[in-house]
Length: 173
Image (cartoon, rainbow, N blue to C red; front, side, top):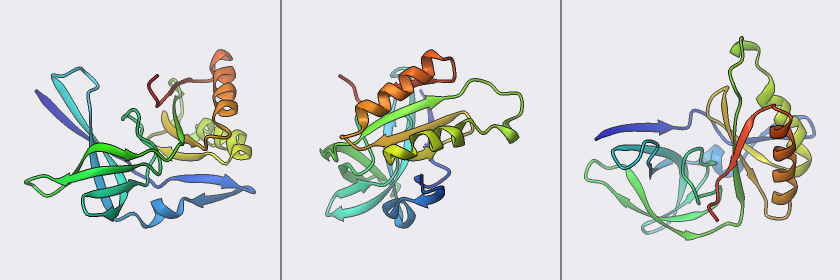
């Protein structure tokens, strides 16, 4: 069995009036909570490291937008346990904050240094107040509040049909 660790390189941000705003919880999150994900099936375990805040004994609030974990969202509270090595592992969700998560994959681009597609998407979705967690120039996770989630999904669906990117939802039916 192989194991990999996928930590988020940045903070959760959004555009507000043309200015980049860092999510207050993400800016001060001092913990990392690890969530098991299975990208290659049960034989290949990966752990996604999400910024979090303690919220009580054995509890933490997620301060990241999950890129790989399903049914876990910015602001959700999870039960955590410390491993023998010390890191915290999410055991189960406790409180759903109601937000919706979307992942956007941008296909290959010849010059990643000049790739502005993620920024363009942030500009487009600024009117919805969406939060972004940029994992790489190719992959971003988006968090939308419940009242705008359907409109955000419609926008992403339309852009995907136009061939701009591939997207998926982070909630399983």
